[in-house]
Length: 140
Image (tube, one colour):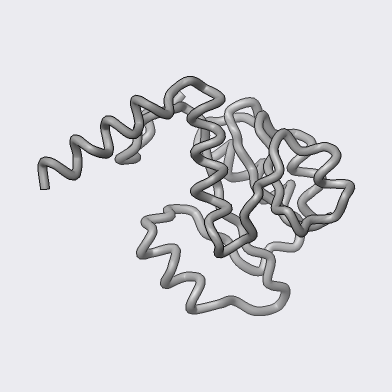
């Protein structure tokens, strides 16, 4: 398994961000991804499962190492295969019924942060992550 090059080395799961924007791309989303240092942003994706399979193969990961957050029915094929599946509170009931976690916060309102905290707490690594973050701030 490849070593991850992330500042927050708290757990060995892969988070990918996909945006479904048929027939177009969003410059603002690309700019936001750059600010957040998201290395894998794919836009205009019609077959998310195939795209995820290709990315995981390229990175030498598999679905058992993957966390995926989706918000609509087109995310269902991926959500069914990953280790931790997360959806938003305004997602269809089918997603809420099968996901590992349903965030309390909506997209753009803290859902990603809440979900990361959920995963860290689930894996027993939240306190360690907080301590590393505080140490990082003290060293600035």
